[in-house]
Image 1 (cartoon, helix red, strand yellow):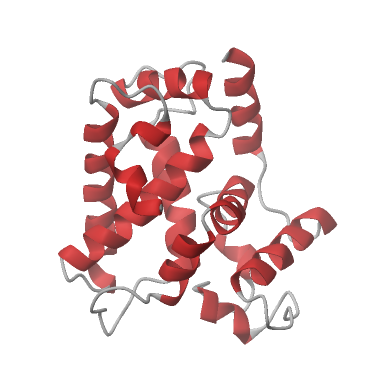
Image 2 (cartoon, rainbow, N blue to C red; image 1 turned 30 degrees about the horizontal axis):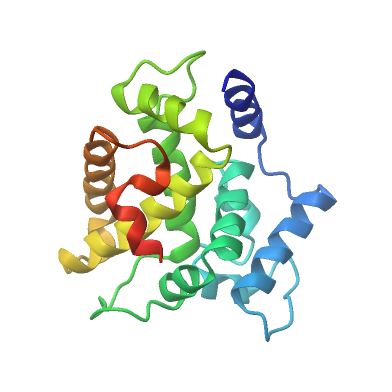
Length: 201
């Protein structure tokens, strides 16, 4: 578990660097996973806005989440492609006129989880963080799986509240509260035991 936690902390320290080829490749990989039948646009293009980046250069949007937030999005697209596509294209429920931007929401969720789980500490001391370490002992990908659950949860809360863009932070906060409640449940031996995990299936 300690080694897994160290590895996760190392991943969190990597800032997104648009000049690194491996980071550029990861961004292109995300596009291919999101839009398998479309050509990958240049690294600066208006087309990135369709995925929910703020401007035509996604690399400026990683400040809060770092490189791990791109890894989280790629993990989501690869491991739960149906859920990923549903949220990307917002195909469920009656949607707001002013929707949350998908990719930016993803970066925010990574950042929210890092704070909620107290992962900037040498060892987490928050309730959710301590429980998370137990889950990490069971599942090396616990953080990435939890991220996917949180994204699904955020969308469900969004629809339930009939929220629009100005309420994004409020929805993110209630997602965090719900996640903390689920992590506090007994009989949770792995991330896949969380009730909200079923939403990914």
